[in-house]
Image (tube, rainbow, N blue to C red):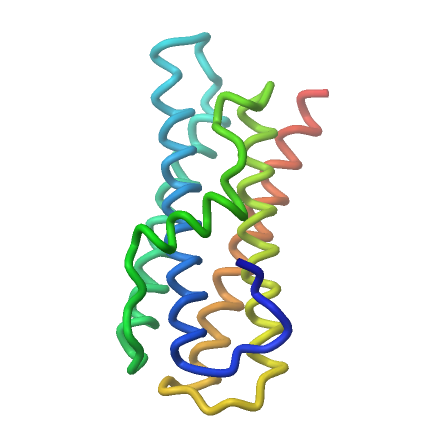
Length: 164
């Protein structure tokens, strides 16, 4: 599902926030998958282990913040399975092992999340709709998450550049 140009209702906003929740679950699961693969493969250095652990913890925190926003809305919840299918179709076309490098996969995850939140913030700002949640609070939360994703992109890129 594309974020689109505008968010016009609480229902649409709830659906997009739920997509963000599932997207964060995907990022968290992929980070944990890589972290757990350490036992099965070559030993990763502490910097990469720390990055993966931080990414998983941050995704869990983002999910909680998004869930709190959904709870504030007076909108019907969309079944998890439907949202999960949308996220897989749009963002989950690859498995963690499809990438040659853990860092490349992590960069892809961080960039995907950043782009989603950037598009969502833009769509909310472009909308003239009144939501069942304070618009400024909503945007502040989403901008905060987007900025944390941008920091994640920078961190992964920095690590990748030191390894070339």
